[in-house]
Image (cartoon, rainbow, N blue to C red):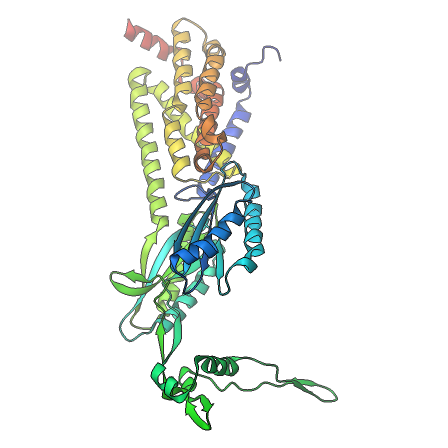
Amino acid sequence: MKHFNVTQWCLNHKEIVYFFLGLFSIAGLFSYLNLGRMEDPDYTIREMVVTASYPGASAKEVEEQVTERIEKALQDLDGLDNLESYSMPGTSVIYVEIKDTIVNDDIAGRWIDARNIIQGISGDLPEGTNVEINDHFDYVYGMIYALTADDGFSYLEMKEEAERIRHDVLTLPQTKRVELLGVRVPNLYIDVDPYKISNLGITMSEIETLLKSESMVSDSGYATTSKDLFFLRVTPRLTNYQDFGKLAISKNGQVFKLEDIANIHRDYSEDGEQQFFYKGKPAIGIAISMIGGENIIQYGEDLSKVLVKSTAALPAGMQLNNVVNQAQSVDNAIFTFVRSLIEAVLIIFAVSILSLGRRAGFIVVLCIPFVLAVTFAFMYVMKIDLQSVSLGGLIIGLGLLVDDAMIVVELIIVNLEKGMKKVDAIINSFRQTALPMLTGTVITCAGFIPIAFAKGSASEFCSSLFYVITIALLVSWVVAGTITPFLANIFINEEFANKRHEHKN
């Protein structure tokens, strides 16, 4: 084993080499077809938004009574990096950022601590303050559709159809989340005439008490028999918004209806609601997020089939329009990579033919798809998706992974020109270049180490660049010592080297 030469071993065990050639080629093709496809890599956003509503308060009151109290409490959060707040009339918005050095597994625990801190001071906040916490920023909506309708359809009817489509999309196993955008919730408005209630001696507290008593759900009891138990339910008096106008108010021996002193109507709230428009028309957006690691191109095809059925069930006058299609963007990026690969292979083949000869160039070109196949297999095992960064790593690697094969092939030909036997020339070629090529490969890979092992979101986003380039270059070095000499033994002979030597002379 002291003088073990991997090249010689491959030449003596052709059947095993053929087996692994076929195995890794099939594994690479399978991996390429089943690799996750996304536009950008997954990464964790280390930020949380705390929104507190304090109706009726001025910006200064919100700042002093809500924002400062929450910020002071959150300063005790372990791993806190930065707090940024905005106080507006009736609303406080606080952005909480934790340090990049916090590992992903600990982030959820930090948000739980933050929620507990805020909950602990909720009793110190002014009465009527409502606090909402949002720490879910990992939803990337790659598909967005807009549901529009002709005049005559209400938002409520549009929402019902949007909810049906949402339910259909959630049946796909790759779906992570579906959110409706721009849904306006109808509210009931009771506009009390202040002059009328003043003349009649009715106060607002009496009207509030009436509304609470009529809308409150109370236990109506139950009846029992020898065998069964029956719960009693009182049929509610208020079944639609017009019934509110029939409510009676008794004052000073007189009875008034609520509609006599107030204007009752339904409308959509404008405060704090974001509306969704498509080509200037009011619409409801349907934002769809896919589970990480899935193939978004395949998901896009499955989603289209579901939406075709959902669209066919829409009433006449409603349309479902595509706004954002990430599957198409990813498909275009994959096509760009494949085109770049073909162009690189053609360029390498042309340059190799001009510099090394037709047979030597053909050997170098054959090594490229095999190196990529093995790289795809490792990416599949390591769960590295095809996305913008990993594709960039593959494109960078294309310019480097042919170097080792070119060096070995050129040295084989040089050894043959020196008069060596073919087998000796092939065996000695990798032995002479193995260590220098490995050193160069390791140095090149080491240049990308800071990208993979640095702390923070930027490293998390770009880390696949290091892994893809390292895998591709190390595989190319192994291929240069195994497959390249094996192919050279098939395609190159002494006559080829002699002809090239004569041509040089």
